[in-house]
Length: 133
Image 1 (tube, rainbow, N blue to C red):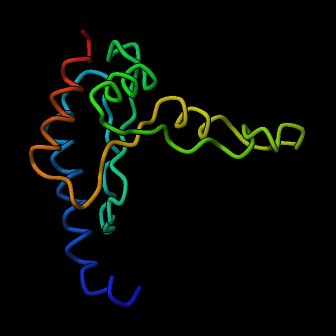
Image 2: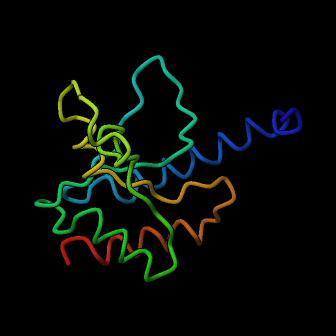
Image 3: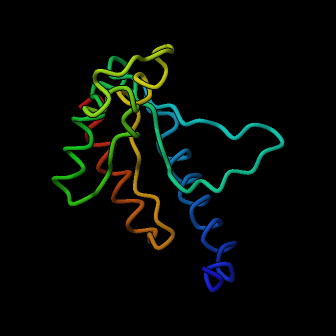
């Protein structure tokens, strides 16, 4: 762990660069929403996530994840809310639907600090080929 502290700033910078690239390349696509960084905060952008409005994008997160998977590009949904986990199916739940909506519309894009520009462009190109296709 201590050794990782020596490269932490570089890793965070790489992940922020990945996120910025996705926002620049995909942020204007219909139905794609990237969460902005609130003023006065600094996100490490450890995960690059996007929310997708299926109606506007012409594709849902499952369809896009599967299209990317066909190109050997790994993505995953946002975390499944605890109250939807099978182990908690009989547990009382208190709250609204925000967590479920994020799970249903959110996708984690590749965000590793070792991604190359070529990797990022391949992800973006595959997404663009499938949105409103």
